[in-house]
Structure formats: structure tokens, C-alpha cells
Amino acid sequence: MEGSEEADELSGGAGDDVLRGLGGNDILIGGAGDDILEGGTGDDYLEDVEGNDQLRGGDGNDFLQGCLMTGIAGSTGLLDGGAGNDVLRGYNGYDYAGGAGDDLIAITLSSTKAINTVASGGNGADRFELDVAGPILGRLSMSGGGGIDTYVISGTAALLAGSQLHIADFAAGPGGDIIDLSWFLPYNDAANPFASGLLRLVATGSDTLVQLRSGTSYVPVVQLAGVQPSQLGASNFTGGFDPAGSTTGLDLSGTGAGDILVGGQMNDRLVGNGGDDILNGMGGNDRLEGGDGNDSLEGGEGNDILLGGDGDDMLFDTSTEGNNELYGGAGNDVLEARSTGNNLLDGGAGNDRLLGYNTGDFPSTGKYTLRGGEGNDYLAAYRGATLEGGAGDDTLVSLDGAGWLDGGDGNDLLVANDDAGDTLNGGAGVDQVRFAQASTDYTVTRTATGYAVVNNDMPGSGAHLLTGIERLQFSDISVALDLDGAAGQTFRIYRAAFDRAPDEAGMGFWLSQMDGDTSLVDIAGGFAASREFVQLYGNAPSNTELVTRMYKNILHRDPEPAGYAFWLDILDQGKANVPTVLASISESAENNAAVAALIANGIPFIPYGG
Image (cartoon, rainbow, N blue to C red; front, side, top):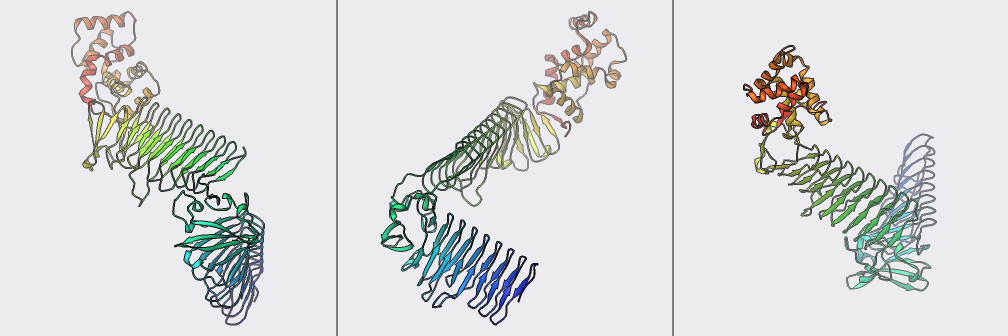
């Protein structure tokens, strides 16, 4: 049965069928009987349902799925991927041929009779995954072919007794093939299993036998043909374990170009130097240094130190355990951590993004400390984190717990959470705190050191304690707290010019002008030229009328003789203009005292442009 040049689906029957997909991405299902399935060109899926089938993928990235074959006296099936990056998956009743390309050959090992099979990867970086699910009575001979091949062995250690796993062309030494026995090793253990005796190498003739301790004895894992134990090094074992038993981790340095450096399970040092490098520490307590360039660093398990260096770097330590330190250095960096331990993230110079994640179901007593450094940084973390913005216009977000937030220099935005009371210090600059709900859901109270803000819906969560904060953002409106600064001056000049409190939109507009370095006298000049001012003070009033009405409208009293004479002389002699006098009386101690109670808990406004 043949398909076409399109994507076909062909299924066999109870007999011995031949199915050819030809071109296109085909699906071929063998059915019962001894079938031959040929995918042809394209990315094909071939499946052996029953019988002694031969599956040939042909060109393309094919997926070949074998069936369970147990109790068979010899090899009676074939999975042949052909050219392309193929996946071959089945049991040890097949022969396997990956062909050219980076292939995955996954074999479940279980047999009741001696079954001798062959698995060949062909040229390319191939990966053999062997799952020991039952007794291994026959010999499986593997050859990776050209390229760096990886042999992953997992399953039940006791079932390896009598194992006849064999690699015919294992390339030993640096740049050679790799054996991955992580399944049999203690989780997140930085110890060398060769030093502890969990693994050992035994010379047998011209070959090497890799053995695993199971109980009080050793079982064979895999035999390496033509390889002596002395030829094998740390680079041949996932985890970087030195067969000589050294407990010193890897010390790898890059070339100055863009390098990929991977550590092992022990305490490694990886240095990228120049170029855009990728560094992965894996297990152990590692030190990773990116150096120059835009580098990517991943700490892995253990207590790691990551230093990005110059460039726009990405530093990650996303394992769930360990006390980690991440330093971005110069450049616009991204730093992320999520372990249950204590984590320090320091962005350094540049506009950085620092994130401390929660760990879901993993219990945690550890804390996050995030430091933005110089630049306009974004910091966000869980678990009652300590967030320090440093210099620049920073955004600090407390995601849960009682956080401690310090904006430092610059105009910062601090975002509180209502799970618990945060401590928020704005530092220098015009700083704001954002809350999630409407202003009516909170009570704002002035304290000896600043302000306390309580969510009325969650009074038990505690008060947010604010110092050095100039503005509050709620979902419906904003509140200005800089009563001795721009906000207080804006409020007072409103009352001085118009004998009323400012409307919220107007307050927002003129406050934005004050924040933008417009002087109080300039704003007073704008007010003095307005229609409302003219209606209140009259059209072209005399200096006598102006001084009298300023006293009435601003201080709400008649002028005292000395004050009246002073301001009248100022205007008559041209020593100051009307806006200057208006601003001066507005900022007088008497007017400050008069409005203090009105604005003690802040001044509401609608931000201009928002």
C-alpha cells in the first residue's frame, strides 16, 4: 500500500503488509503480522502494533514507535530512522539504527529470554535512554557513531545484575561521549560517587566495566569496549565526576568568544571571559562569572554565586533550594531566583530587573534581599522581601508578606501588598506608594515619623508604615503627602488666589507643573491672570484694594497697620509684582498654620494625564 506526495495515513491489516508513505508527513500503523513500514521523505510517524516489523523512517525528522517484544529468542524487529533528527522508541526486541542526525533512541529493557540486539546512533549527537524495567538476559550492543553521544541509564539497580549493556565505540576523554547515571545517585548531592564508592571502574581485558553499588555488592552497568579506566575523565560523566575520586569541582574558562560552559554536581567555577556566554552550574555550590558580553548564567542546585560582569546579562537561579547571590554588574541585567533559602540579588549599574519568586508547595523560611543599584530598576519579590532601589527612578513591588522597601535616591514607585503591613521609605526624590483598592477602603493617619495606612477590609493585616513618601496612588484617586513641598504649596496658592480648596483635577495639573520645576511665583502669575481671580479681586483693583482683599481672602482678617503698610509699599514702589506678593502671603507662617489641619492627612488629586 502506497501513499502520495501529501500527508497520508496508512494502516495495515492482519497479514504481512508493506506500507510506503512516500512524500509528505505520513502516519503509518503496521497492524498484526510481520510488516514493513517505510515513511519516505517528510516527518513521519511509524508504529509497530504487533508482529516482527521493520520500520524505516527515511529522510526527515521521524518518530518510530515499537511495541512490546518479550519472550523472543532473538532480534526480530528493526527501527531505522534514516537521515534526520529521529526519535526511536521501543523495547529490546528490536535492532535500532538512528542514521545521520541527532537522534533519540529510547529503549525499555525487559526480557524473559536472551535477546541480542544492536543500537546504532549514526553520525550526529545522539542520545540513548535505557530504562531498566525488568531482567536483561541478552546483550545490547550500542555504538554512537560520530559526534558527542550521551548514554542515559535509569531504572531498578538490582535488575542490572547480569547486565550485558555494551558500547562499542565510546569516545573517552575531553570532548568525548557521556554516561549519565544521575538516576542512581542521591539527589542534589555534591559528593563524588566515585570517591564514596557508589560507582567504580573495573578493567576487564582491553575494556572498562562501569559498576554500581547495589546493597553490599556491585552490579555491572555498562561495558566500554577498547577503553581503559585511565582514559576516562570527569567530562565523560554527567555531573562532572572525576573517576579518580577527586572532590574538586570543575574549573572552566571561556575563550573570549561566545562559550557554553556546563558544570557538574560538585562545586564548580565557570568563567566566561569575553563574548556572549552561556554558563550552567548544575549541582553543587558554584561560582559563575560571565565577564564581558551579554551572558546567560544559571546556577542550578546548591548555594551559588553568579556574577554577570559587564554587558546586559541574564542571571537565573531557579532551583528550589540553596542560598544564592546574584550580581548583575554593569549593564541592563535580568536577575531571577526562586529557592526556599536566603537569596541576594544585586543589579549593579544599569536599568535592571530583579525578581524573587515564590516556590509554590515548597515550604520556605528564607528571605529575599534585592538591591537595584544605580539606574532605573524594577524589583519585585515574595516572602516579606527587603527591596532597596538605590539611585535612579525605581519601581519596588512587595508581592506578599511584610516587606521592607527603600526607594533610595530618585523618584520611585513603591507598590504595597495588603497581606501584611509593609515598611516603605521613599528616600530622596518625589516618591509614590501604590495601593490596590480605592481610597475609601483605607485609613491614612499622620504619625510622628510619617504616615500609617490601614486597609479597612483587612485591619488584621497590619498598618503600612510610610516615611519619605510624597504621594499615594489608589485605584480611584491619588493623595499628596508632601505638605511642606510642592503639594502643600500648590494647595496654599489655590486658597490664596481663589479662597477655596483646589478641585482634584486642577490640583493634579498644577502639581504636575510644580513637579516639573515651574516656580510658585509663575503659578501665582497664572492664577492672577485667571477669570476667577478677577471675579474675586476685581478688574484692575488698586494696590490698596489688592492688599486689603489678600488679607481677607488668604488670612480671613483685616490687615494690621504694619503689615498693610509693608505690602502696600512693596507694590507702590514696584519692589515686587502681584504674583510675588500673592505667593509670599500664601507661604506665610500664618497661612501655613491656618491650612495645616485641612491637609494633615494628605491632599487628594487626579494625576494630570492619568
